Image 1 (cartoon, rainbow, N blue to C red):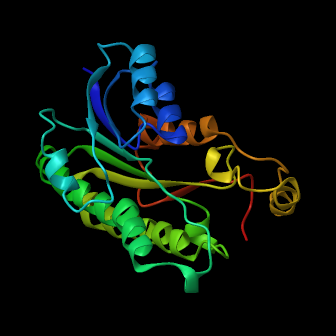
Image 2: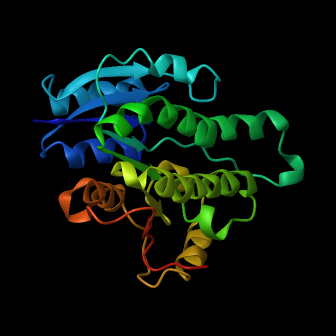
Length: 239
């Protein structure tokens, strides 16, 4: 029997990669997106109607996101959070609206969605929750203080929730990417990129497929004894 996977942020580059990586395994999908419907349509064409149960549009920056998710009529076995929005700038120049927006997207919506589906997972003693965080949530980044803070909050949420629901046989883990080849990093100049890569022992950027494979592993039977962990996909970068 196929398990149902809700991918939050399925239209993003990592979310798309996760869906494609899972496609050859016994899963069916609920794909969330905000604005990039074109990416979702492309995924549906690739995956096929038999694998995609439904798509759902929801702006995670809005407080009513949990109400939108309640419209999903299917049981959810696995939730993968791959949503995200970066913000570059000095903290002193960051507006309260921007702080609230990033908080809602990365933290509040994640907590609310988990809270919505957790009772059934606890009742069934089955479920997996995986959050794609960021290396900046662990080591911080100048000019990305708010983004780093929100990603750090996700990591703390994973560790705390894993302790709370472990006895209910629900696995909660995170995947923490380093410098990945995505549009989020296209603002870097060649010089800035090379400076970043001096801190990466493998000396190169990672790919969205690298991240997706780590997520798939955490959903596999091989990861059945992994709980509350942050799997780093960062080429060895530690600081």
